[in-house]
Length: 171
Image (tube, rainbow, N blue to C red; front, side, top):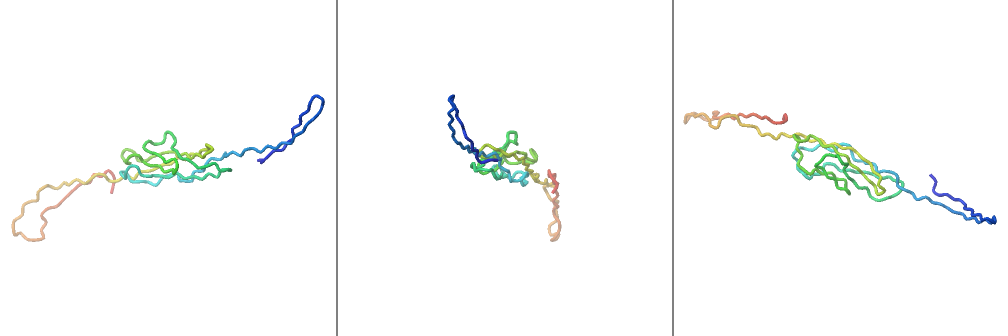
């Protein structure tokens, strides 16, 4: 609130001689403002079985601190979902394993943005997985077609295939 302070120091001895000296104090300005996380609270949904080591979210932030202190680093809060890692420089969050809806339908994690003065901001993020049909249909028709007479004509149905699909999701 005040950039400097001016004051006078007076030294008095026993004989009542006084000496005065002017002084000026300029306080060092300290960054007291945490970064602001600008990336969203939800990551775009991804398909299950879409592969490991894919970037699922990128944390971004601004640091409008009252002074410049350097770059912002990113981390994940302890207790966030396992199976995730974050690049401290870029904020890219990646899955370390192939996502599987049946094992886990969503991920929840908290991103932390920390500036060089150790001011930090946190943001909770969720990622949903899209459930995909992983079950192939089963052919229920027999393995042989009924016998037909030779020379019985063209364009006749000789076999009808049938199947059931017990997909894990409706298609």
